[in-house]
Every structure is written in C-alpha cells, then in structure tokens.
Amino acid sequence: MSDTDRHQDQSPATAAAPAPGTKPSFELGTGPGRVLVWFYGVFTVAAASRSVVEVIRGFDRAPLAYSLSAVAAVVYGFITYSLVRGGERARRAALVCCAAELLGVLVVGAWTLAEPSAFPDSTVWSDFGMGYLFIPVILPVTGMIWLRRAKQA
Image 1 (cartoon, helix red, strand yellow):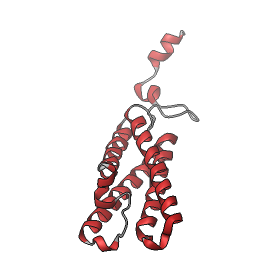
Image 2 (tube, one colour):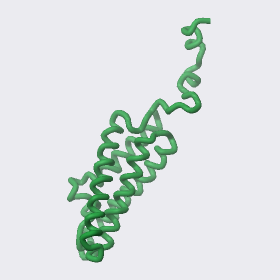
Image 3 (tube, one colour):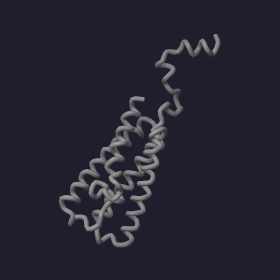
Image 4 (cartoon, helix red, strand yellow):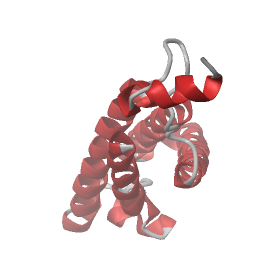
C-alpha cells in the first residue's frame, strides 16, 4: 500500500486529530492572534511599569488606583502567556480572564465617572481606558471574539 493510499483511507476525523504530544492545528498566537499577543504584551509592560512607578512615588496617595494598575498588569500578563502557550486549556483560561478584564474595565470605568473622588489618580481602566485610546475596553472584546473563534477551528 502506498503513502497516497494510506492517506486516502483515513477518515476526515482521523486525519484532523493531532497525534498525542503534538501541538494543536490551531495556535492562539498565530494570524490575528499575533496582534493580540503584541497588544497584551505591550499593555503588560505598560501597566506593570506604571504600577511600579506609582507605588514608588507614593502608594498612599491613591492606593486603590495603583493596586488596580497592578492587577491589570497581572491580568494582561496571564492573557499574553495563555495566547502564546496555546491549547484548549489555555484558551479557556484566557477567555475567562478576558471576561474578567472586561468586567473590570466596565466597573472601574463607570466608578471613575460616577465617583471621581474615589480615584485621586487614574488607573489603566479609568474612564473606560480613555487615557489609552479606549484600547482597554476594546482589547478584551476582541480577545473574546478571537478565543471563541479559536474553539471552532
């Protein structure tokens, strides 16, 4: 039996299933996912740098805002790692984190508009990310769309 005959004998389900120990055929960080990895990577560095500088300059001035910047950095970092790692488990974890991120942006964004005195200094998520061109509110939505599409692939 030739190699061509063997490939023709395989059913589509058998041919599509990756062999044990190999990477899945759809990587989260490929194609448009690379743009997400890039943005999340940049935002990880930006939020982490911002929170470190804020804490050093005077954490007591706005501890809530500065803590939220640190939380944002951790969330962005985890999503970046998950997108690069790939696989179904990482996809699900990143999807949950994107949903939590979106919730955080919406809650903090509304809170900063409703009660500005609670935030003497801004966070990455203040005013729905207006200081970052609204990317903090667009990014998790885009991420969730990509991650849901990745499940179907």
